[in-house]
Amino acid sequence: MLAQRPVLPSQGARVEAIDLARGIAIALMILSHAISGLLGLSEVPDWGMVPIHLVTKFSSSLFILVFGIALAVAFLPKAGTPDWPRRRLKLMLRGLEVMFWYKALTVVEMLPIFPREDIVAALLYQRFPIWVEILGFYALALLWLPWVLPLWRRMPLWSRLVLPVAVGALSVALERHFHFWGIEPLKAILVEDADHYTWGQLARLPLVMLGLLIGEGVLRWYGDVDSRQRLVLGLAGAGAALLAGFVALVLATTTFDEALMAVAWNVGKHPPEAPFMLFSVGGALVILALCLLGGGRAAAWLRPITVIGSDALRAFIFHIVVIFMGLRLLMEAWQVYSYPQVLGIGVALIPLTAGWIAFIRWFRAHS
Image 1 (cartoon, rainbow, N blue to C red):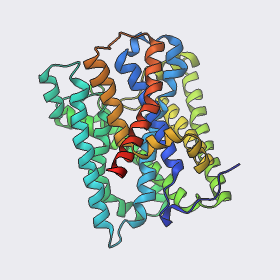
Image 2: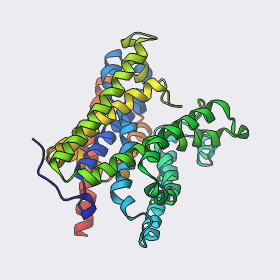
Image 3: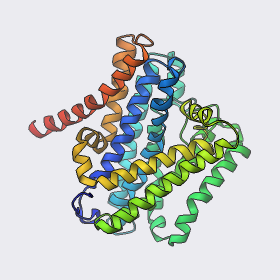
Image 4: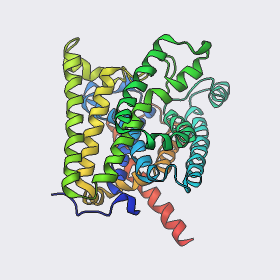
């Protein structure tokens, strides 16, 4: 049964299902970072790669989709209005805040592993970190997307549906055939490069656009039970179709088990390739559909996950500091524990992150 009808997002209510979806993305990210940051993928047994580490591949696509949904729900209705300059400034200041933490956490991530020269190079965009690089994507996106949201809102529906495909094709063409005047960091930031672990602004923009489209659907239909059911069925059907497309594509070239193992090993993640993206986005859409189906009731049942999703930046900061500063640097825990132990650490970090966020909120409320 669906949760009780909520107030429409446009009326000022926070859609907890979106927080839940974001929280699931972060929880999967925490699990992945704990395993790769404390043990390394080369030490993970096959039963850990598939299915455990495989499932975490839904995380990044789900995170970016929810980013677009949140922009549509919270900001898109005000784009182009007299109040928009204030809201645009708010988004850009948030981008600067994320940029600060991106650089600070770059130091935290690299300090136990790399010499000072490499850390400085990463701070100057001459190279890139791995585990915190997704913050760099969001920081830059929040600095330029607010300027184009009013244009997106004015575009006819058919062009908004076509544009993600067009941008995706342009990104692939640029990544394969344009060398950006030999400036590898620029190419990595915009469309990704095989020699750098980055999230390209153009390469991942189609997912943000898809999130904007879904967010517009949430604004229009989430408050009505029947309409929300159709939205959920549409998202679940699209996700299932993408997963079916992944199966059909990989079976034409390899075995299913080998394809799943390749995805678990991040083959085709950077730059994005069709099999990986079909699997990752398909799973993300199914998870998103389930979160919208459960609504506020599911968000309440999974409260720690929802809390994490309601404060994504603080959750990201906490788990990176614990893994790399606390465990890897101070406790010298690199490849000290077995895979089951590291997996347990990752699972335990999820409620600990929720508890930290709840404590900070309690402290601020009573200080």
